[in-house]
Length: 137
Image 1 (tube, one colour):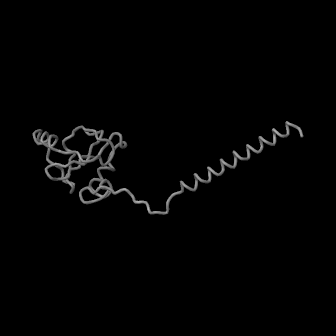
Image 2 (cartoon, helix red, strand yellow; image 1 turned 60 degrees about the vertical axis):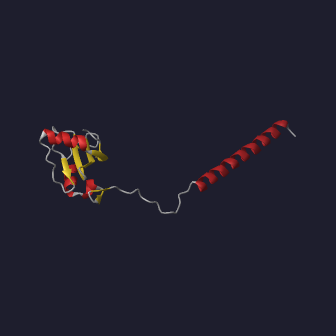
Image 3 (cartoon, helix red, strand yellow; image 1 turned 135 degrees about the vertical axis):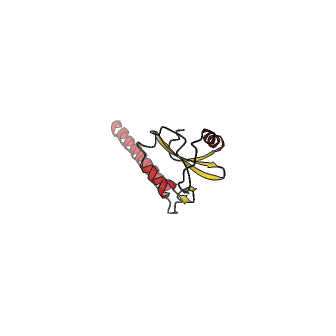
């Protein structure tokens, strides 16, 4: 027999074993990484002002949200705790003032036109969460 034929036959044998091993590894990978049939729990949405997804489910807040000019990089909706109440601050990149965009859960504005009241609000509020976009102030 020709030595070249033996080498070719040996190489073909090795290549066939490598292909078989690769195929077996691929099958094992696919079988072990398939998705489970178990139900997937969705992450809980925060309840704010008695509703989940307040940006869409609080009518007054959704109206303000729809009035935003630009996207989430220049606008924000931030939830605060203040004097045992949840307060939502609507922050717009085009607003010229920061003291007239704070609301109670029912959509009533906080009266913060007095600089002393506004300073008290800023000093005593506790940030809970950014509900939308970027906190600007």
